[in-house]
Length: 317
Image (tube, rainbow, N blue to C red; front, side, top):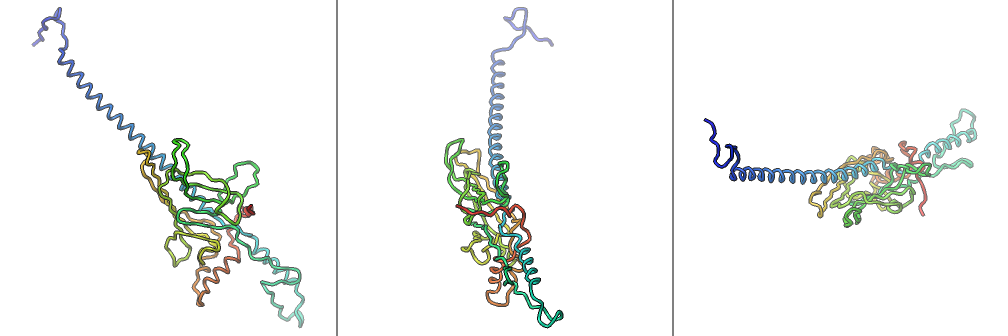
């Protein structure tokens, strides 16, 4: 059956009624609204994802930076002490007069702490560096320093510190709680001061540090590690074996950023500590373990010293 020509159209031409045009326009408007909402939602999700990735990247990079510094934490001391000591002892032995009674008589014993003639044993090496860690700040020496100026008279070792303080954003101009990193190529008796600092992470909502000892009988994380004379018998002149760091951020002025936190555990690779088997060996006398540990802390050298630490000693202003 063919379509009848509409009345009023010359030559019987076909067309659309006003109702049909309105229906089509309504459908197009609905589709445009749906598409616009979908595009808007996609852009919002993209902004959230970008902000989230940015936050995670900043946090991960900061934790990786802190972890690398901690992994390369190192005591500075004279690494050739034991070689010099053995050399002087050998010279003492050679300088001794023949024992009375002829060549077959037993030689006179050599005092390992004394001297013969003008040959004097060097004093035990002094540890010039420290590891001062509290719940929300950490200061220590590390061989993670990178020289940025050609031929600069700088060692691989430097003082490094991490702490919380306010800073102002270069983009928004608003102040927030920030994680700061301080570094100094001049190593002195106070690792908590000196050098230059810069903000590592903005909008920090939480920054916590815990420390683990090498003591096999103490597996509890500690909130403080003081290696100087203010520390306990188990922390003086010692570095921890592991450090746990939690870093969390939250920007209340940017809903796209959201909250994010991450925890990482860093292992100290070159602690230069006393052998744990000797330091924490059981003692039959009261206080013997502690006394032996403190004596050893001021004595011999662990063979793990590296070249970067040898040139790190210095005297502060």
